[in-house]
Structure formats: C-alpha cells, structure tokens
Length: 484
Image 1 (tube, rainbow, N blue to C red):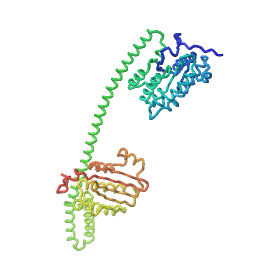
Image 2 (cartoon, rainbow, N blue to C red):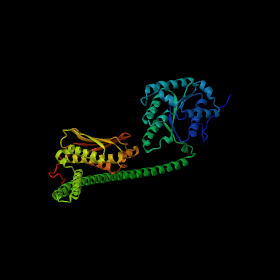
Image 3 (cartoon, helix red, strand yellow):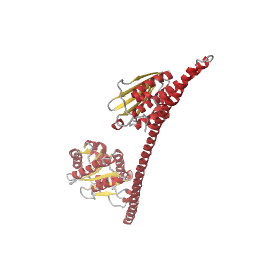
Image 4 (tube, rainbow, N blue to C red):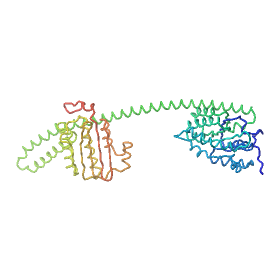
C-alpha cells in the first residue's frame, strides 16, 4: 500500500483544497507551466487525500503533467480514476460540447458539466461529499480572442456552484494579457472570482516586507509604462498629422504636375496648329507661286530637263508641306470632326508605313467637344506610330465608338505584343514603356478619361475612354480653331 505525501507550501502550511471556504471560485495567473502544475498538484492532491473527488478539465500536457506529479507524491491516480473520484477531461473537447455560435450555451453547460460533477460527488467519500474542480476552458476561449465567451463561462461556473458542492480553480497564462487594451477584461475576470493568485514571482515571496517592496516596484513600472504609453500616443498622433500633411502635399504637387502636363499638352497642340496654319498659308503659298513661275519659264528653249527637275522638286515640297501641315493639325478636323480626320490619317498612314490599317467609325458620328476630338486624334497618331515602330505588326484596326455617356477609341494590332513584365510595371506605376503611352494616359486623365492596355502573343489593344460630361460638352470652341 503506497503512502501519499501531504502536499505543503514553501512556508510549511498545508495547501488544503477547501481552505478558501465553501464554493470558492479562485483564479491562478501563472508564468511557467511548472508553477501551475505545482499548485495544481497541491490542490488536487489534498482533495484526493481527504477522500473527496477531483474533476480536472485541462489540456493534455497539463493533465499528463499533473498525473505525473501526483504519482511522484504517492497518489494512485489509476485507482482514484476507477473509483470515479479522479475525473480528467480534455478542455477543448469538453468546451466544444456546449458551445453554440461562439458562445457557451447555459442549458448544455448545466447538463454536461452538471452531470460530471454529480457523478464525482456520488463517488466522493464521507458524509459531506465535496469536489475540487480545475478548468482551463476559459483560458482557451481567451487565447482565441473570444473574451465575451470567457467571461460568460466564468458566470456559468458561478451559477452552477449554487447547486453543487465544488471548489473551483481556473488558470490563465499571464502572457495572454500583454496588451494595454486587455486591462478592462482582466479586471472583469478577476471580479468573477472570489480569490486571485498572482504569478509565482510574487506568491513565492516569503514575508510582507518583500511583497510591499515588490508592489512598490510594480507601481513604479506601471507609472513608467503609463508615461511611455502616453508619449507613444503623442508621437503616433504627431506622425498621423505629419502623414496627413505629407499626403496632402503630395496630392497638391501631383495635381499641380498634372495641370502643368495638361497645360504643356495644350500648348503643344496650339503650337502645332499655328505651325500647320503658317506652313499652309505662308510656305505653301510661296511654293505654289514658285511653281507658277516655273510653269511660265519651262517653255524656254534648251532648259526643259532643268525645269522638269525643278518642277518635280517643287511638287514634292508642296506635297510634303501639305502632309506635314495635316499631320500637325488636319484641316478636316474643323470641317468634319474626328471621324473625317481619322479617315484621312488612317489612309495616309497606311500608305506611308506599308501597314494594312482599317477604320471602323460611325457614319453618323456627330461633332464632339473640341478638346475630346483633338485628344482622340493625338492618341490615334501616337498609337499607330507605336504600332509601326515597335509591334512588328502587319495589320492594325481602329474603331471609334460613341454613346450618350462616353466615346471610345480602340487600336488593335496583330504584332508580337508587350512583354508581361513591362505591362505589369505600366499598370502598377504608369512607367516602363516610354513617354508615348504616358502622354496618352495624361491626355485621357485631363478629360477624366482612362487608358487601358491589353496585350498577349497575338497583339496589343489600346483603349481610351473619355466621358461626355456636361462640363466637357459645354467647353467653348474658338472661331479661329486656336485655343485662346
């Protein structure tokens, strides 16, 4: 027959499980598992020594550790288990039996835990059977972040204590209360218990003097921590203000840069239009006059070849000046709008580049605001130039679509496509593919529109969508065709 050693505390007093009074509900906060198991073996061992029952609802490591310590103390846990006086249960499995929608159900809790306590009470020896109960289910709920459920379960244990003669001890690892916002919940947990056992670093102090000194040190640390938290909040607030100011400054600078970019584009278009008009009205007229003079002089005898060559050069100059003038700003834009200008440009581009370029535009496409027509024409120029220079395509298709809310210009080619890496970079940052697409994007942004680029091994699609907003539709157009 084995003889169990009566567990004692370090100061020599017997750690009797019922010394806190009938139906006590205590909580132990611990730093190390060894400290928890030491206290728990005293608690459960004293109950078993007295012939009472013990119900332990804990994690497997703690159940195994407790059984090992009890056996070292001389308790026959197997016999106590057979007698139903020692009831070890898994905390997670037991908790799952009475949880509904993330909260403990009172009826299921009473049924399941009440049944366990009732059987343990029946197995206890003596005229007044008592139960020493230990539970970690609340600690599991806290670890999951379900604070409300943990506090509710503490309340259900207190309610159950009115019907069963048990002494309950809960345990929480102190490491779980490591944030400032845990303070209020920590106080509520302490308030749900009749006794609170601090972590072992405090409870192991021998005399009152040491404890008072420790309390004073903790007060100093708490004050220092509170000061640090206040200062940290002030720094965080200052950083938030600085961040907001920086973001505002960046937005202002970005808006200013976009306005500057848009202004430069407008000035560029204005200058192109002026140069086109000057070429047509000035140099073009001079060349025409020169041609007329040559026509009169070429009939001089003996100079036919020279005059024919001069005539050819002048005719070529007139043609190139006309082409350059039209490219800078096509006169058909003022007369027929974007549809007419696009047809002229597509036809000429196909002849110059050797690409097969087709156009699909509504025959009844009406006039659009001047800013939109000019933007679409510049986008068409830039996009087809990119197709010719970079795509290796043999064909390109242009389409112009319009409805009541927006106008869309699409250019699709059958070239090699854009490398995926460059395309991702462009979508993410707007860079990586030269100034052509960046300029197109800026023009679209200026009119509250957007640029989309899709590409794979079979070609590239560039789509520019511009909304027909009332503000844009009401934009005045100058009589001369120049921006004032």
